[in-house]
Structures are given as C-alpha cells and as structure tokens.
Image (cartoon, rainbow, N blue to C red; front, top):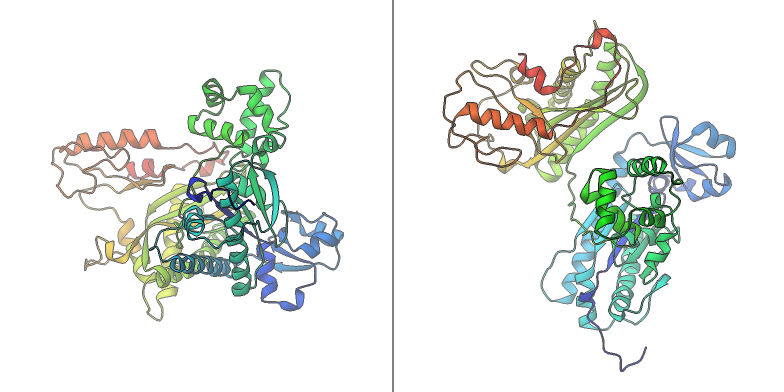
Length: 543
C-alpha cells in the first residue's frame, strides 16, 4: 500500500459482522460432556435430528442433515451419540453468555477510544446468529490510526472503493479479536462474515466453516448473486418462491433457477417493482426481493436487546384426542413457561400483559391458530413472588387459563371430538414493574374473577394483529356515556386516531379498525361436535 495514498475515513462505508456459532446445539451439549468431543453427536427433538457436530457429518457422508429421522442417522452412522435437546434451557443460557461477552467486548473497545460512548447495534437471529453494525467503531479506529493495512480471514470478491476496502480490513481485525474472545470465555467456536450489508455478510459467514471468517468485497456481489438460487437469499422464503413459481407457470416460464431469472422476468426498475408487487400483493416485499436479487441490501442492523420480546413454550405431537391428555400437555407447557417467567422476572424485572395460547388440529397442515387474552393478574403476581408455593400455584393458574382458551375457543372438552397436534403457551407485551398502571392497586384479581362476567359491561375482546399490538374493545349498556379523559381507548389502539367522546361512536370506530386488521386463519376441517369454535371477539360478544 503506497504511503502517498490518502487515508480514507471508514465512516463513508458500512461494516457489518455476521456471527454464526458452529453447530450450536451440538457444541453446547458437548461442552458439558467433554468426553464426546471427538465422537459423532446429534441433538434430537422428538424423533428428528435438529443438528449434528462436524464429526457426525463427516462419518455419515452427508446423510445426517437437519430434520433427518434418527433411524436414518443411526443407519448412516451406527456409532452416533444421540442427545435429547427438547429442553432448551442450556441453549438459552449459552446464547445469553455469548451476548454478554459480545456486549462487554464492544463496550471495552469503545472505552479504549476515549471519544465518549456510542451505541453499537446487535441483532439476534435465533440462538446462534448475531448481526453487529461496527461502522461507527471502525470509523473511529481508522481515525485513531494504528490498525494494520491487512485483511484477516478469507477474501471473496473485489472492490475499487478504497474507503470500503479499509473499513472491511479493520472490521475483519475486529471480528477476529471478537471471535477469539468469545471462544476464550465460552469455549464455543464460531464463524464470521464481514461485508457492507447484512445480505453479503450472511452469505460470507457460510463460505468457510467451521471456526473461520470471510470478507465479502462487494464489487462482484451482483454477478455472484445472479447465479445463485434465490432461496439462498435471506428474505426469499418458501411463500415468495411459491407465488413467483405459480406466476411463472401461468405465463409459460420455467421454474426459478437463479436470482437473475427473477430480475429478467420482472425488470429492475419501477415497472419491475410494480409487476412483482402485483404477484406478491406487497409493495415493500417486492422492492426488497428485487433488491436482494441484484445484490443490494440497505436494511439496518436493529438492536434487539438482551430480553426477548416474547416467551413461548410449544409442543407438537402425533395426536391428542382426550381432554385428560390435553390437560396433561398443557400442564407441562405451563410448568416450563412459569419457570421462564420467574427467571425473566429475576433478570429483567418485567411482567407480561398478554397470554397467548396456540393450537393446531389434524388437517390444519402447518398452520397453528393463536388466541390472545390479557394475562390474569394472579399469574403475574405469583410469577414474581418468592413464596414457597408460588411456583406451584402459578402452574395451576396458568394451566387453568390456557385450558379456558382451549375449551371455549377451540372446542376442546370432554364431550367433544378433537385431534390436536400442537399446543403452545406464550407470554408477551412485557412491561417493567415500575410502569405497571395497577402496581399500587390493592384489588386482587384471580383467574376465576378475571374470566367471570363483569356487572354492567361485557368482557374484553382481545386479538393480536400482525403488528403485534394488543387490541381491546369494550362494550357498555350505556352508549351515550362520554369517555373519561383517562380512558384507555381515548385514542384508537389500532390507528391511533382520537376517538369520539361518545362511547357508541368510539366502539364503532374500534370495531371497524379491528375487522380491517384481523387475519383469518386457514379453514379447518373439524368434527361436527367441535363446530362450536369461535374467534375471541365473537365468543365474547355472545356472552
């Protein structure tokens, strides 16, 4: 590198790290069983292999993949060691360890610069992947000087942009240091992809595995992506492929083979966006898909925080046809959920406001139906209590609430015929304890009192639209009563418009917004005795 070359500021370029822990589930399981380090290991959930270590993949000659039946894995490699992975607790804890190391290391790097603090967004994807936007950190490192003019890791592609080249050099050095720190602290190895966008960083992280890193220079990005199948691009999923393939078939075109096919069929300008938007019925998605197929991705790394936005305990099974079996399965899910809620309270001091119960019947395919209700205060209080029997009482209360939803919204009862294949219990809409409006209230609410009809008013109708907000619609026998200035629905919870001071008009407005925001679940073929199934809002209206 010529000394006469003007040193560019990295602030002109983005620098994104994509971190991916190597066979994460297997690594975590082996970490607590060091004697299995050189043995073929698979992690099982039910009768399927969810992941395996590299020893198993090598000895099985590629026969052990994700979702491979365990019987197939044992035939391919009889010496394989199977470990039950149905309890996700150790994997959640390992994920928290890794995130803690990342944040501590980033904080130390910012402190070393002595230029004040600034945020470095980290975005989690599952337990084993993290995006980090180190653009600002790289810019400050370049300005401070002292970083060598060299890449660390494999280099893919080329670029004529000196600012981008220098930024990715420094980013690759930071990635190497961070990977070493994570491995030192957690005993887990990982790969890194370094590039100017999340798309290219994600593609780069898969190029040289395991325990390595790759820098993707963006000069050849469009040409590289044009020859790849679009399903390999993050964001181009099964549903998108199905819609485009159906359109191609109707128009006498062949199946999608490369990303270039999508660009060629629809074009790359405004007309292309408009044409694809008609096929996908979504303008934003069409724009994103065409940009991805051309190697362009300007999406930001969104800080996801340490605390999850929601907690879910789910179990799928072959068949559940008796109410006793359903109650047993609900109790197991409730026990797991209470354990996690109590742990969440200890770590983050927050409480859930929404309880979500999911269920799926035979014939529903892969689609589960979700029903959301306000979390009963009894459960919230018990999950944050240190009483000796608080955990057991929480499990009983949560099981009772979940069974209420299944019985009254899914037709699951002792007198009905049903065949369920999935049950889930979730908690969401968390708030910190200090922000709870009713934290100082002395009125105790139990599950029974919550579900009991309230004198003078109907019960709440609550659903969860795609945007994740809680929608609430209350009715009253006095439609002329003006709304209180502090009423919870003085603004529409859906469109945020100021509502009429007359309750009748306000309720009508919310109902109209609610109907527009609702998504209709797939039609289900159900036995005649289970036909008394209602949506949450229609159920409460009949009360």
